[in-house]
Image (cartoon, rainbow, N blue to C red; front, side):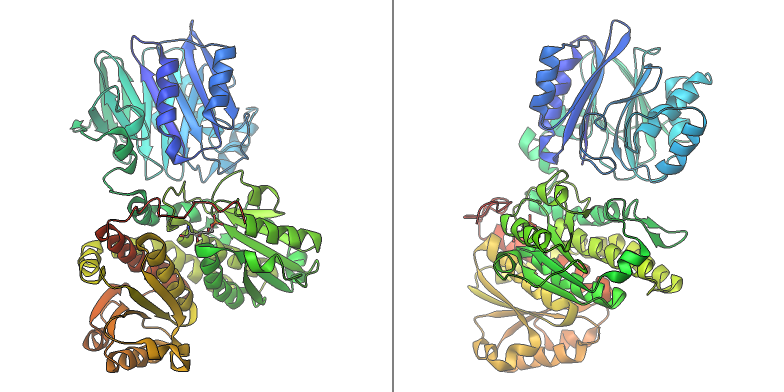
Length: 613
Ligand code: AGP
């Protein structure tokens, strides 16, 4: 996610803003910039890359003033570059804006502005905001009213801060939806605004947090909060007692817990800007393929490692059902040495959160050498797997700090769903009605995931009963077999307990000999096409003295008679059921690891990105 910092007061804004951006680095970014009102004019510095590049630029060409705004950018529209970095300035140079979020209707707004004679200088969606604000100011409105009128035209979730040279004593900030917060820091004769607490905590602990659809006008000694309809708001002042590092985790004990809970929002971000809910069509801005080209694809090979490989196994079901293209899944570390059979009618899809996993990159290289198309699904903007691919889809999950991957897993499944719908749309193998149904199913995901996250307390209580066992077995079947693999990996990597994911139907071919009262069995037993089969697995495990924890569908009372514990999830359509069934397993692994006193965010022996063989 992007980071925003603004300041107004008696001190020099530049070092305060740069320091604040530094505190937000944990959010991940690929470019940064700052704008300060200097001698009555806006001075702007911005550069691609890390904050050090920006600091160097500021050292070479200083800018000083008492009011300013800064930004770290996590690119969604427009590649990481200095021209796409924020802040963005209006053509007259009188207004400047920083923005967190996605203007979903930016194409229409850009066309309207260009028809009005506006010349754009970037590829970003954000730039439409500053031109719209300027146009309202030129029409005679003050910066508060101009901003209010502008956001009324934007679709999507946003956090925006605006500065105009003709009103040098104020900043205006707006929050719409969940594109990152807007926190006001109330200082002594100075005010701060930021995306998140860590950026301003060292200056003040008195903070006001904008709710969605609220805006604020800030001067150095006052602030006025209002709803977007102009109604005044009496916002509560909070006294923040956190230390800066824990502030980055918010109210969560670990980044992993925070990221598990972020999934309700990150799944919304993943969908944003790709699904037109009016026409039920999919657009993938960085992976476009003509209908003829789409029809030529004979095979898809998905390569990935670890959790991303399990996402690929789920995606196989989705891609094959919707496109009828055969999909082969392989570990990057195996594929790279298999001398694979590929040609130009194959597409090799790499799934990688970091975009830097050496085995996955090597597998992509195989694809390139054999003239197959290279696609990638990545989270880290500007990463190698994004740059070398012929086309890519970003997970738009925001930075994933915990070593154990959670939100990248679920968002990469949604990306494969979007790819499958897009290919089917281009190949003409999916009716509009069916596409509409799938789009509606995906749109329900954030709410269903939110329902499971609300059940964390019951999962935490179960962890207290299970955390001392030394071996676990995870069973799943069909599209939820990969979830058994992923659930086992989560437990292994953060609690150091041995856990094995297994296809439930294979138990009778040997592993059932393992079952006894010393090894809990996690069985994913949803009301789907393999429910009866899974039910008999549960009975077989119970008849051998096993302890069974079932992940089951809300309202299923039969399973409660058979299993020792039941973790319920909402009833979901089959293709999205894995995204819901994995949530209790993520939370169970997390709370077991916490109970065992493990270092959840940095487990022993592990790295967030395996860039060496
Ligand atoms: C998952 O929790 C692990 N951190 C690990 O398996 C990870 O998924 C794997 O290393 C692949 O990483 P990538 O998605 O960045 O390529």
